[in-house]
Length: 167
Image (tube, rainbow, N blue to C red; front, side):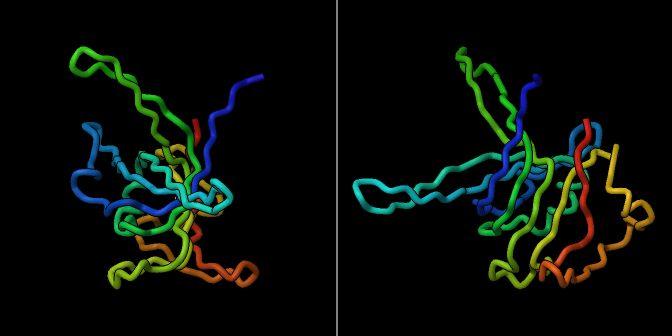
């Protein structure tokens, strides 16, 4: 039986995506580093309390480029991805850090009070790294902005983009 590495999180961005957290690799691949806060309610000593966990995420390729204008502090997102452990040495000591590598990101809810955020209420983004995509999108002109449509059965907005990362 093979192992499985899959994680799904829903949380809010802890900061805006800026020039320090977005850039391109030497080979020209876009990379965004973001962090989300995930709230949980736990019962402690008979009372409900909020507990917050923070997770670092890495978003690659076209997904990072497409999401760049929408990744604003407070924006709620759903992330599906995998855990990646980074090991490194600093000041003679071994360190380890675990991050989430995003494979799909869904923007949840509307604008978070920022009038510049004109994203539809809900969008699905994934990252194909240029190697695979939903066949229904095969004829779409990706140089044009996504066409928004309303799905009456779910009462949600979507761009129709649904990329996935294939290995």
